[in-house]
Image 1: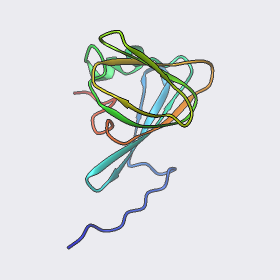
Image 2: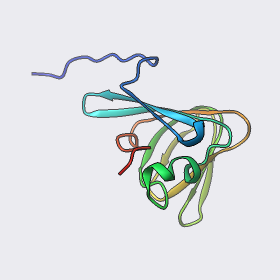
Image 3: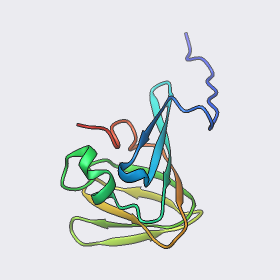
Image 4: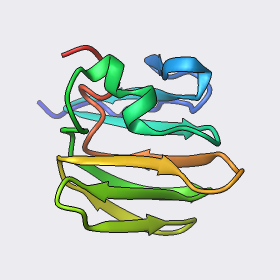
Length: 122
């Protein structure tokens, strides 16, 4: 027996996880064995301010793999290395990082690996 075909529409996520202070949200889509997120991060968003209180960890402990659709996001690893991502960039962010929005435009991204427990109390 094979898995059934699935179709989910962007406007109807399985769940939405808001960030602290209204600085964005993660729309979560459960697709069989996969969980995919569409993150919307408002200007001024920073993981250490808007998700850390939810996660309760010193830095983000999720591995994120995906693509930036619009806006810019900077990521700094616990070891001090840093990268800035923009529209059309594919990314892999290993555990142990902080991230923030660069500029005054919201950042929208798709995350294929780090959403199952993201922005949820551990």
